[in-house]
Length: 313
Image 1 (cartoon, rainbow, N blue to C red):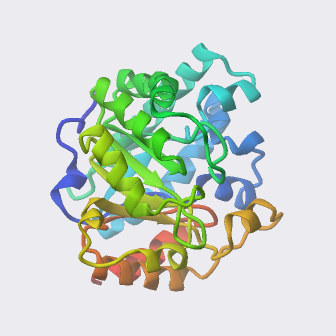
Image 2: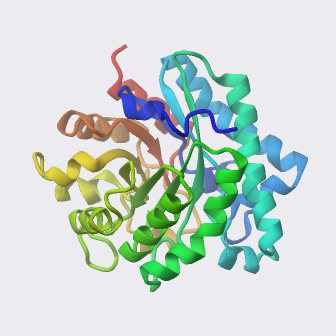
Image 3: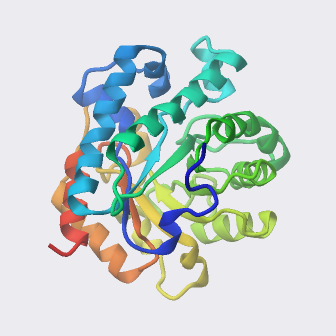
């Protein structure tokens, strides 16, 4: 049963953490083979589920020691029909995966939650296609496409759904509309190129304002993920109204472009301390940015550095 669906604690203020780059950590640090960058395949075995628990627990330990809340995103960024088909998962198998991902997070919440560390269970959604390329679905098609995964999260008892690494505004609109129909709180996160714009050329301002206009401002908040702060910070202008809708960041460790990262056979972990300082600057300039995590190349060391930079000792 959903614990916070109707009263999400991250909406009440205070700093919340999230995890780092799940797939890059599992592949490059843990030596796990993830076909098509799909971490959801680990949910199909006891060994895989144990590995995922161990992954999350490194972050939950930081949150417990720092006394912060935490948004637990499921390992389901690729668990949609197109990517599932590439891996031999049909509709029923994908539903079992999506439901099972929430069950695993509920087990973690039972073990780790404390009054000063509320843990929000979030069903993670990725784009239909490649997170670094522009999709071509219209909003109606996107709504129908993503509805099954959102329905699985709703049935399983997730508190909310979170759509990451979106490049197509219509896909964001469709996800938000599907979430609204299913009564699920949702978050939308866009990714940008090194020029601070979506791969389509649209600005973050256009993406957020258009999504809000077409959905009655249904998303609870927005985030920016899968880009280095040096890519998007120049696109943020203090005082602009749309930035009040941006509540968090999950940045890449590396300042390399998406094309460079896509073609790299090694991991660029960047500089955790530098990333922490960049987050500190963002949170000082934009106080609404209170949900802090990482994306490609980041791990628990980066989240610890972000805490060190952004939280009083």
